[in-house]
Length: 392
Image 1 (tube, rainbow, N blue to C red):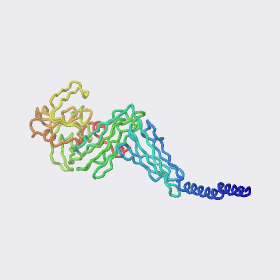
Image 2: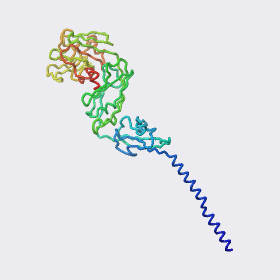
Image 3: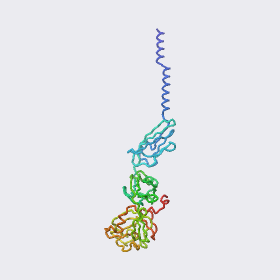
């Protein structure tokens, strides 16, 4: 009996121990783990700023990188689902956005990289940009949807002086149909004008995308404006005033359609020479010498058919008090005068005809005056700069 019991006990121990079977099972589990590990990508994706970050800078803070692999896809979206453009560089090592981000906006980031074996690793993140305490906007001309003359630049005046002009200029994009090179020029630190090398071609359609939201225009001051502006170039009208001959030739596409007698600035009050763009049309206005530094020399409350040529106060306008000056001698305080009637009721007089056949953006060029050329920033008159000066 004792021998039998011991044998049974030995058999039980052998069965319970299962040494060879467990060892084999352990080997099999180890192989599975090694295989799973070998299928996992070695690429590592990193996203800055960190997930959940707040008050993130709108420029320079967003960066995506890959180590032990190459980036193959980076998708950054705002809450509306709009994708932020960017570029993968360094052979797949990094991605950065191609423009600034908007302020007070939550962005999501999805990035994918592949290792040398083609295995993918992905990372997702989100962050929110800063809310600025100080902001700026730009007021612009011409108005959206308008039709303007061939001399009309796109001009923006900012509410704050800009110390980061490159960032601001980059945020204003201009497209034209037909395509033409359009360049910007700064006048001081608060005005930016855009124009082509030559006058616009008649019929050109211009679209301006203003994307200032989030642009740091000066330290701690951010743009808050996003807008698309479109305008069309009308027929080509350029009028040439000869201060010596006292005439103005109105031309369409370089061909004279009408010659009108004028009077320009008398000695000591000579009219500027140069190319000037009509920036404002007023059926009637008051002209007071006090406003342009001429004291009480004149105060005419009902000047008809007035169109502004400079910020400093040069107009081409109707004149009912000039007698026989038109076509004969210069008698004004610097403006270009056309014969008119008081009240401007007669559509047949030269001033009325010219007013009715002119639009904002038309060019009036004055030559043979004894004054110097008008300053390019005195009105919308950047055409008095060479193309090389404009782009400098």
